[in-house]
Length: 147
Image 1 (cartoon, rainbow, N blue to C red):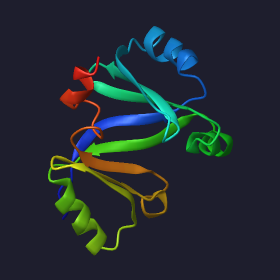
Image 2: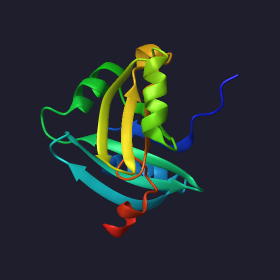
Image 3: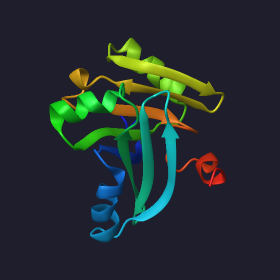
Image 4: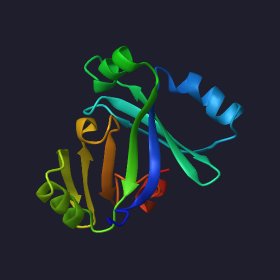
């Protein structure tokens, strides 16, 4: 029997407007703002919200070429990905690939930070982001230092 490879770090939710979505997540659910970030090169902006220890990431398209436009057109607003905090992510990702798991978009951010995505085709329709450290994990200390 396989052991859990990590624990939930955050859930990413694609929205058309972060400003509009905040009304629900903060005003109705009571989530608290953690921080905001823009990545024009990758085509998104995000905010992280804390919902009693559970982190929600709201993702809004940034720029006309954003991958989120396609996602929103096909699926509408909703869950985009689930991120798992995977200790020793390099080793675990290598093991997954050896097992034949469809791993895409591997990124090496530094000695303590490595990530990939498991294709939704291999994971019953769910896009999993696996990784460790900053910038993958929502609670990485570096995010809070940027405030």
